[in-house]
Amino acid sequence: MFPPFSQERAQKICLAMIRQIEEGSLVLEQVTQVSEERAGIGIMLGAAICVNAEGKEVVLKTASGFSRNLVPRFEDTAIYVPPLVTPKEIEGAVAANDDAIHALTARIDALTPKKGENLSPQAQAQKKALMAERLALTQESVAKVYDLYAFHCADGSTRSLLDICSEYCRGKYPPTGTGDCCAPKLLDYAFFHGLTPVSMCEVFYGRKTAHKVSGTAYPPCDDRCGLILPAMLGLEILYRDEDIIVVNKQSGLLSVPGKTEKDCIVNRVRRLFPQCIAQPAVHRLDMETSGLLVLAFSKEAHRNLSRQFEAGTVEKAYVALIDGVLPAKKIPDHGSMELYFRVDLDNRPHQIWDETYGKKAVTEWQVKDVETYNAPDGSRRKVTRVDFFPRTGRTHQLRLASADSHGFGLPIIGDTLYGHCAPGERLMLHAEFLSFTHPSSGKKMTFRCKADF
Image (cartoon, rainbow, N blue to C red; front, side, top):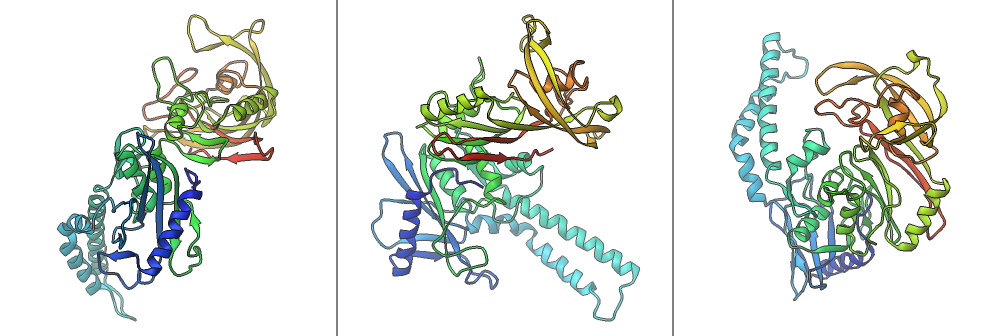
């Protein structure tokens, strides 16, 4: 994943930590026995520079894993962040099933045939049952371990690992070690103590591997931190520099503050990056639409990006699931439509067809495929996956291009305004592609973010 904060200043601290370890003034204290397969494997060292409520900088340091602590042999004003969960707590969580799992393993091993032997059908069935019983106990122990992990978030809330996984992993358990990386530890401490991170970095220390070199900085890992950090930050950050930030907006969250609802992408960005201008949004996505959004940190960047959107030089592409089969309606696989809509004054925010006073909305489309949709209630039906290329930026443009009789006449699945949204469903519309010119460097910036449907 992309580093959520600038790495440069914190990286210098991490490199200093390596020098201190090698000269003996900083000790990696092993608090559990090292297994043979883990012996000699390196670790990540992490540092975060934060600012407290008085504007004073606070330095946080930590190491990856739960089995080692950093112990300074010198006076240090930095705070050494411990693991979120101790080895003793983990040992206690798995203790209840440990003996039973070992006993089942011994019984399974006893039923494993030697070379050249065959198990009887009865023995095979018994072994299968024992393995299922062991798996159930193992999963129960894993759940107890993961239940120990909870993370303080940027918005002041606390979320458990299992709660986060129910949202981001579709209920599946995350990889082993999730929550033990440096970034979650540093951010958890910072948010719990009301600190604002301004720089954060993780540097590998240890024997060179196929993927890591000692002394090199690496971004937070995708498989573990990529699950936790978006929930902790309230944002999935795809790119960030001094001028702009690009995020993957989740469905159900406003792009900008509403009349009564203040939680939105803009306010979440401003909470994480206090240097951001008051109005960083240069375009919007409907609350129910997910996908790519670019925001500006400075007035100059905002002005430049706004001009690009106004001039129509920004390239955008969306993917949608249409509730029906477009080829059956004799709709071509590719085409472009011009529609005219205005707001329904008696039923805001709905838009209605008005060829006289409506604003022209130009939309190009490409049919991708006809596929089977599995609804939340277990039913199945045929739907059409379509790529949309809006050439204008009108309110509800793509939703109307789908649902209105002047367009496809079939709504996007989950459309609460122009179709139907079943319980457990969302609007199946996602901003998948965004391309623009960087406001400072003039470089072409291109982003792709696949939908999760």
